[in-house]
Length: 308
Image 1 (tube, rainbow, N blue to C red):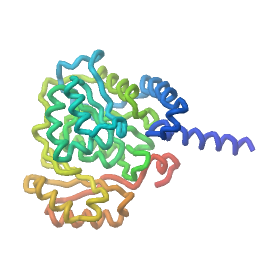
Image 2: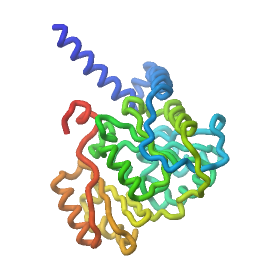
Image 3: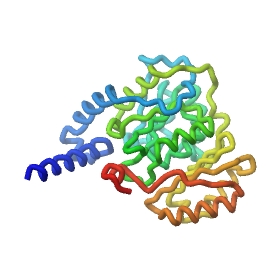
Image 4: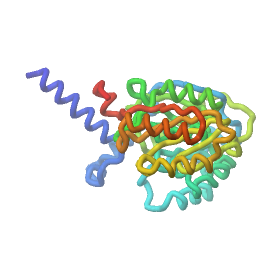
């Protein structure tokens, strides 16, 4: 009987932790959830290990370490549009902007692209890389990339597109990504302002700095695609999975003539691994470039329980 009770406690703890680390319902928030989350976030972000996977040096700026204005832009954290929120942060002179999934992806859109040099001119841009949907980030020149790791993977709670942490590091080295990439335990990732701000300040304090300009001028972008130093990073979502021709068309607009390789990540919630393999072959044939899939059909629950 005691084994069953212990097992039940573990299951309940895992379930509660999953809720804590992601956006809960308004009902949970009204039950004091935010207070508990803040306490947990402050504690774990202050004590978790920071593992510098890839460290080309943080861009030297006049941004102060302890007094810098930090904003963590969380999905659904505001009723404003992303563009309006970015305008507000820039107008209010924020000096560190931390971005999660939807905001980071938005920067590859037509509207979002113009904000990359504007942010770089006054702030550090920090991206939470929790799955293959962030693959184009490696070609978008952020300053810091946070990688929440569980069982060797950067994984999202519900998106089936995890990437091995070693793969992220290897790709960053290959392309010459200018971002400092830091691994943290997945359980230390709490998507709220306090937690993300504490972790980011710790990274800034532990980094060495280099006197160099922002690399945003070298970036080429299309929706969910980036090209940097001759390497293309692209994420295949539902839209592209249903319309490979659209993907190849945008790839041509991005420019394949001066590229030497294409790395692909897939949303395996809308395409099977076998179909992804066929998609990759079509992309390689259409572009004339070697292509490689760099993510897997995993998420938090699958790697937590040891399966895929």
